[in-house]
Length: 156
Image: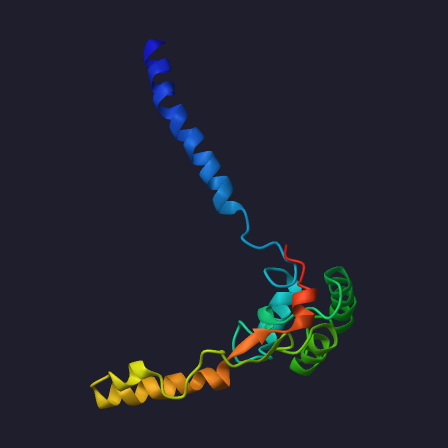
């Protein structure tokens, strides 16, 4: 009986340590039925309406999440399992803002066309690369629009 208690004393803490870790590992990182998991996400990703799998999840809802899910439940059964790419594109267009809707052009206020650090680069190829990279800031700079800042999305 003493040996049994001793083994139990060694094994029980291991079991207790494993269970909390398992619970943490099983908890989803995101709970959105639209952007993290579910039939809508699967349908959009499988339709391949975008060139990558990130574009859709970066879009903002144009309507309440519950309303979009309800509309999708109506949309999907009506089409059975044969949903065309065009039908998915229309559903997304009707229920989500376009990509970049919440962003606007922006130039960093401290941007300089010829920053001093580029002149200190000795390698000609690297200097050319740095100059081109610096120029991209003017083209790629974005900031969150005032509308998006006033109406942030509900995060799960």
